[in-house]
Amino acid sequence: MSPRTSRRPSDPGDIGRRVALQRERLGLTREEVAARAAMAPGYLAYLEENPASPSGPGLLRLAAALETTVDWLRGGGADLPPGRGRAAYHPELYELDEEQCRARLATHGVGRVAVSTPDGPAIVPVNYLVAGDEIAFRTAPGSTPAAAVGQEVAFEVDHLDEIVKRGWSVLVVGPARAAGEAEAARLTARAPSEPWAGGERDQWVIVRPERITGRRIHTG
Image (cartoon, rainbow, N blue to C red; front, side, top):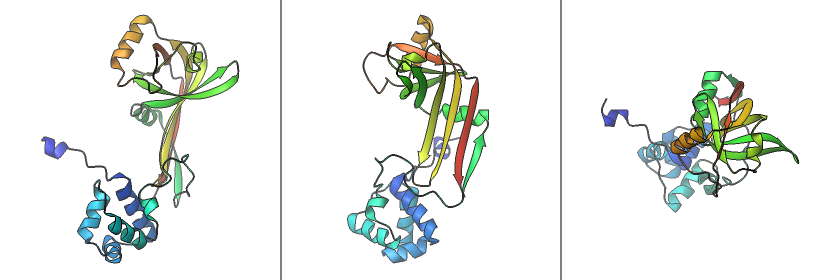
């Protein structure tokens, strides 16, 4: 297969996805929205399917045509906590099987580990990687994530799409241990990035999954 035929489709970006979502919510065709916004249907199709940044006047006309605001089309509210918007029409909740859960675990680099500390339960984000059947994350000795060693812990990853109101979450439960010196060196060599928190974080913690569950919200 040639590089041209195997190339992945481009990501339309937030504006394109929001335009397509709002148009579908209103039950309008591209031609109808293009006529409302005084733009070519071909340009609207390009905008929905490719990363683009329409001009100020064009975006203003498009927002009016879609009965929304320029701020919403530009992703206004993206820094707010997720899940504040309305639910999608006819959402459906599905259970993920173990294979689907592991596939989603392998796509992420930041998860949350829940541990018991002397001050009570704590949930903290950590950079992680999948090492065989196990979950590995790097932290600093004496830190909250390091308290996972010797405990049964919960580890969670999720993904939320605020635009289309879809998402999934995967929960792993199992015992955690400290990696040995040789194992830690291998994990360090494999790590795709340094921990986002910075500083000296040379203790690797390994979680061995004993139970993996997941859920997915799908919209029709």
